[in-house]
Image (cartoon, rainbow, N blue to C red):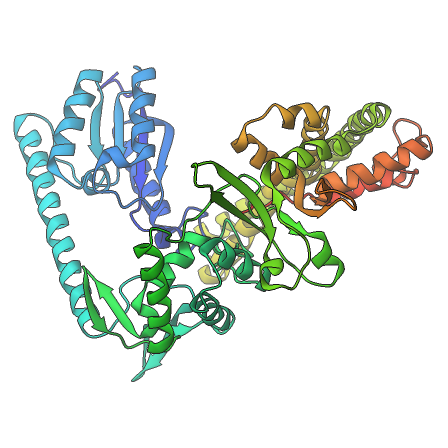
Length: 562
């Protein structure tokens, strides 16, 4: 209760508007220095109320100017509605929660109706009518400052564009870089030595007039053109047809920058000549004028199919999805090997329906022997039981080490208090102990984490392939695409010797490839199992248990195809 000294329940809302702030001093705090600073100040304000923060809401890297566009803020409001005992929402500053005064007023009314008070850790306006007035004035100032900053940024970006600067992230074929200029580090744009030659090749192929966007997408994927790496796709991913289409229309590649609809000479190095650019524009205009402009066709098997004949000849060639329309308006979709369109492969075009049916039938090959699946589950249970005993012993050892650290830390604090030793040296020792404590605490969490993840993945894998044929046959296009991404890296397609009936082979993702290797061994000989209680490493050497333990040792999630 307020004034009784008993902490009231509260929640905190922490936010940064730029994702780069999350990487500042992450060695100190995994959320970054900005969030860590906000958390410390908010906690200090909470202790002074007094209040007890029961849940923390962190909105990382969201620059949205309105609260409707902040999912974590909306999640917090929903939480408050479900938990009427919460009395406070504590923020670092009102500008962290609101960027315009209308949002602030609407949220205040909403919180008032729920009996919740918004507290700013940095701005203490007190209580009463005048405090509400000061908070409202602060929100108006924040709103004005936000708009002025936006105008200032727009003016600066326009000036940058007029002087030939690039106002956004580097485009495909270029990289953002920092160089030394007159003794200072400045941001600039440089050519991406890895991707630029492939980007130029994409322009050249399209300018021949022999490639549609889908053909170009398949060709560039085969040649190895990928987007720059990201945290989600560290190896990059194939460049989509829509991205290639935008690239082919962009004058940036001949040395110009575009800003707010205006074109200015750029300072970056062009990748393509004016002649090549105009040839590509002529093809784009011609196809658009004839009503036969490049269309990006989508199919759930797109990107998953490669040509068997080209693979056997030492080449990589994806299938291209095409669709023709008869004079009566009937549509005839088909898949074609990209190299066959260049006269380099003799595989005929295959009707989409036949390919779809062939993939459905191929899913029968995913079925594991019933005995193998049952025995694998027993093995997983034994592995988990043995690992539990090992983890318990490891945790006991780590806890003993943590207690020893507590004693060392207490002795150092005593020395720091009486001043009998150099304080700088003691503080360094305390920092070393803190780092050691974090390492040991991480060990408490991670001692069995890798194996637990492996066991979980394997169990889910066994559930998925209990009856994969029926699962895939009855699924819609979106689910089929997800299933293909889960089980297979790619399919290889050829036609039959005496018919157009497609023949399918595959490359499975590692988990399912190992399971099937072990399943095939199961059909030729029975399991050799060690007595229950043996160490997992001992069981791993018993017959076909070995490939299963390899799977447990290194799980790699499937990367979705584009």
